[in-house]
Image (cartoon, rainbow, N blue to C red; front, side):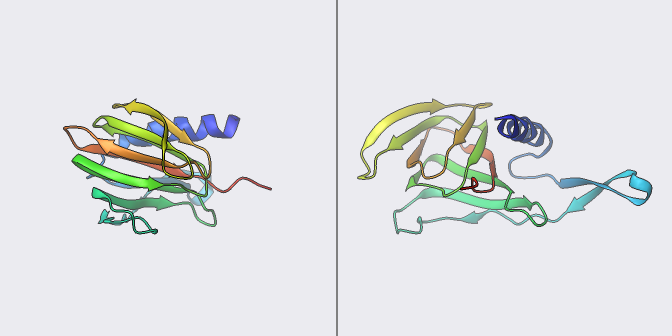
Length: 157
């Protein structure tokens, strides 16, 4: 739980520093004599995601990695969904923390058959924590949905 709280706080701090579609990513490292230095990192552009791996269609969804920790499976991601866009039902195999920068809409929770079993309305500054293998989909409102996400390592078994 402590790790989750630290990751959430870190994500909120990153969200305040890194705009959704522009800006830089800086990693603070220990330099010579353990003096902290800021290292500017290259980021990938957002790429269109027209469909999920199982072929289900998305509408206006773009996604990309901002940074991956060296030697780790923790990645900082960013995403954009156009106004009135959507993300098809999907699940992730790892824990994921999402911070809503802008936009609002519905996050649907789904059962294995794709049926809706729950729903929340998301809005700016919400933090949504996904446990592994939780089926969900997104239906965006009248403005673009911008978010930052942190994909965490899979839980130890």
